[in-house]
Image 1: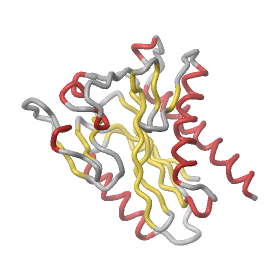
Image 2: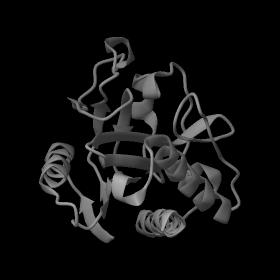
Image 3: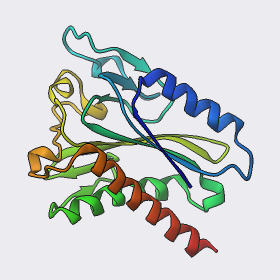
Image 4: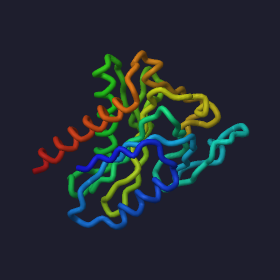
Length: 207
């Protein structure tokens, strides 16, 4: 497993790099996790509908992409972890992988004394009904890209112009508002470590 800390990078070239990596990988290509932040951007998945897009004039670009799900927002102060994995090789189904990513965020929050949960009907992680982490994946021939985002210390107001993940009025929250004052770099490394641990346990159980 290779971990790449890419810093703050534009969305579109990063998405294209994920596509290129996935299309060119071989059966023995190591899996990778990419830690990034993005400048402000709305991304719209393949299920995205016009009525969920920004409800007022906004200078934030809207990019239609190939992941599942609907619309979300990325911006500075949010950890984005891209999971470029061969799920077939790991013996992971898509639903099990989604639940594993949710569990990683739930475990991270638990370490900081915050109780969170996933929802079967709306993938992601929630604290008292407010969404703190979003998930969206693309699977091609058993190989995965895109991943998850976790709100750490950011301007949440752009979420108010959209229906986050297609849910009108869905509240969002972040670590800072829950009293967790950890730097985004530390959170990114902690989340990556938990995801890596879960993947190692899955691989060990399958062997």
